[in-house]
Structures are given as C-alpha cells and as structure tokens.
Length: 210
Image 1 (cartoon, rainbow, N blue to C red):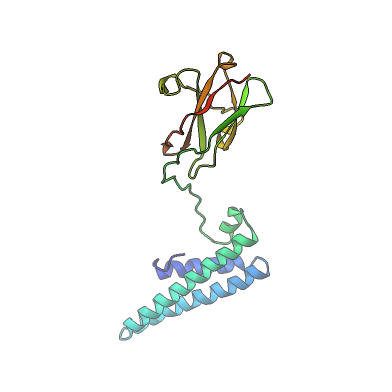
Image 2 (cartoon, rainbow, N blue to C red):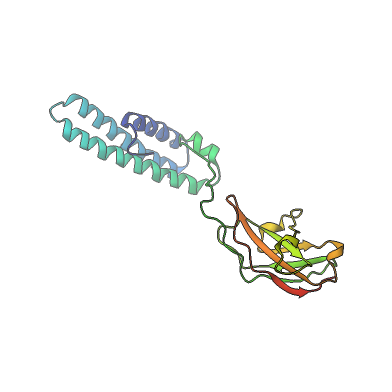
C-alpha cells in the first residue's frame, strides 16, 4: 500500500485486509486489529477534514500521517503473512493483499568468463569445461576450434542445451567425432537476456581429447 494513494481507497483496502486477516491464525488476527485501527484513524481523519473546513490544513496533515501509518501497518502485515505462508500468493490475495508477480529484466550485460579450463570427461567424446561464475550471467555458450586459435571464423558452437548444463559454470561438452584426437582451443561466452557478453580469451592450449 502506498501512502500517496487516495486515502478513501487505502481505507477500503485496509478494512478488507483487516477482515481477511481476522479469519487467520493468532498472528494474522493481531495484525488485522492493527490494520483495522489504522483504517479507522484514516476514516476519522477523512471525516475531520470534511467537517472542519477552517481546520483543513491541520486535518490534511493528520490525514497524511494517518494514511502513511496505515500503509506501514498494511505493509508490515504483508511481511508477516509472507513469512507465515511463503510462496502462497493465492492465500495472500484471499487476505486482501494486492499481489503482483513480475520478472525483473536484466539491466547489465553479462561479464567476461574468467579462469576458463577444459579437461577430459569420464565419457569418451566428452570434455568438462569450467570458468569462474560470471555476475549477471544466465547461461554460457561454448565454442571450439581445431584450426588457428586466432581465427574466430573457424570456431563452432558446441553448447550443450540437452541437459541444461549450459546454465552452470561447470559444463559437459559433446565433441564432434572429427574433433577428437586433434589439437583444440575453446572460447566461452556468458549470456543473459541482453545477449552475449564479452568472449573469454581462448583456452585449452591445443590439447587433444578422446
């Protein structure tokens, strides 16, 4: 609840939430009584402002303070409700709380993968790649080349999407058959909803894998 919202709307919302909390457990009932008191104070402040034209300025201040107090009480009650019943938005709505679920978009591009390394996996044809976890990265894309290390055009994408390991800083890569037992170099790119971050420096050192 926002104290900048219309006091009438906040009062009605406070009454609704107080009524909803009254059907809960002991802590919810206690919070409901506090909210009901705050709502009553807003109602009194509204009446005072409407009936006391000459004291409008004082009444408006009182109304603002009461509305702010009610907002704090409702927000505190929301915190208690969420603690008592985590991850239960349907219950929160039944208590009268407004529940909004929204995805917060990435605002920072993923950083560069650092300290990358590759090693032979237990299964033939597979290698394990690892890098330090990258801030703001949701996934990683891996590339390999058997050509010149500096020729970016010869790197192929070997990202493993099948088992979802591309979301981890430690991943398994399935190498194509013609990339076995030949010198290889790798590049890792961290990604998020903004796209690809800065590529890692090439790593692998021309090692051969089976």
